[in-house]
Image (cartoon, rainbow, N blue to C red; front, side, top):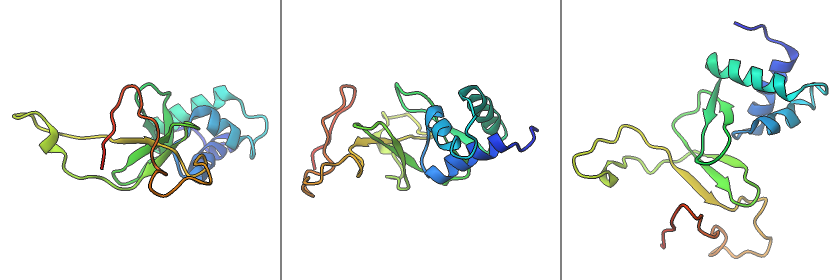
Length: 145
């Protein structure tokens, strides 16, 4: 087990205070507030160690670099802003999705990512009816409701 260094504490604090999954560069930017000389290699080394020790989880989204969040969250999903690319936790779940699987298949787990515009990127004059709508992703689809 690696010792609890100032760098490691700054990295852990950066992720914990963000309250959302962070890219390594986001971790570096936030942790440098506590440890100005911190470098990206130290961030990567500590992220790897913290994942191995079970303190952090890796959040992998299709076509994206890995992000990191504090371990111990209940089952949850993620929302990615299509404008700023930040990822946020979604503490809700549609529940049992086994009805969507092909007949005869068994669903063992699921991961859901919502895409749209976060509140910081939403234009101020957006109406409530169209506020959450963003252009469909090239690889996805939209549901009309």
